[in-house]
Image (cartoon, one colour):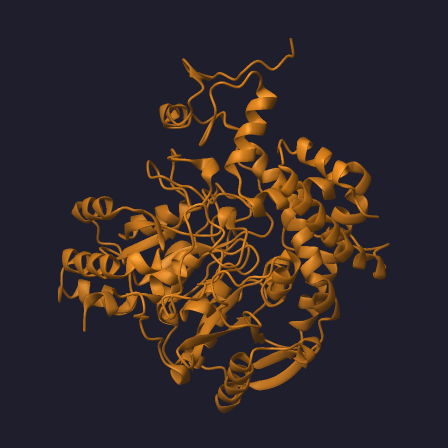
Length: 480
Length: 96
């Protein structure tokens, strides 16, 4: 077995026992990246040399010498950070995202910054100024998005774990498409300081890995109180170390009544049935909950809020302080218009205009304020549901990864596919995207949701399911 | 109510975006489709519903009101092409 094939847990154990050196791990991962990257195109910026120099620094943390990659909307001091947009150009942030600081302090080394949909707006990883990333299980298909580069990098064996961000499913859907595990933590569980903002009341950083145990290890490092993010949890402790003798016996797992009539791809339908059998075999009780407002209004509510927040967050890109600019503008208005018109891609422009439209005084009450109230109803529905169940089981996406370029021109149809992921962000809940097996050559993932702050319990339930489904294989389609 | 392409163009200008004719057509279609979907909110009675806030946020967490120097202002300035000394310099703001 090559070192790049090891899980994060086995890698850290092997490094601790000096069975192999950090340099050998680095070389193995680098070689793997070199052999696949031309076909997968997961990276925006490779930082092999930086990783090499980080290996020289003394560190005895639990991730000492472990290579990783970060979605390119996480700030890295002195290293180009683009959010996959032309407008950020070659911007090098003057500070690190807190989540990266925590990983670096624990000894992780950075192999690079990976691809995403521009400003995290999209679900294919094809909406990037740097070109599309390919699914390592089938190069003709999308890896999902927006954190497609992170999912593809872990799936292809570049690194044992990666960080992404999830505003409406951007960790869970690509994890399912690429056949890895991904956790969207509770809103407030992981500091977002240094995450390039999209929808600030929805954004959350989280990990990808090839085993649930590996997600636990990463969460034990990044779930950390940070005074720089006022939404971050305080005065609470979360224990991500339980992995032995975990059980879901006596726990209730719900299916959503209103989702039962919706069409799913046969592979996902089959995975849902198989997972229910596993849960029952493990002693869980299957129940049903009703989420009528979620099922009918969540998509509209989410996009109204996400676009309104995006329009405000993206006002800062004006060509003055960072990124792409022009030097010959006659006045400041011309400079702003030229910079933004060239720098933003079509999807981002559409969302900015829509967000501006919804928050204008004459429409604000009817759309934006109404959406904030619908969000209250959605959160209340989940609160009630979690008095009747411990977890909710549902797909991460109704469809298998589509072929690259096959997406419908009508963006609204694509948004409907996010119904299974985005209500979780509206209510600030944690959601685990887990591997269930293969359908043909493609992996199939599903999602387990819990109440706020139940992240450790969801991962423990994931461990139980993983005992039956096994660990996903490293995807080899990218090998030249 | 459907927005005209002129109205969408006005909104784009407000967002500091200049659209080509093709982009404007696309944006007009996009926004009108989206507003149709949002009109579904009218089916709900939202009269006594409060706008959303996270239930745990009983008080706004505040940091101590203390000035802290950013450790590396040079690095911030270095990333801009519009710098004059320790300031950002922008093109003229007042019209002639």
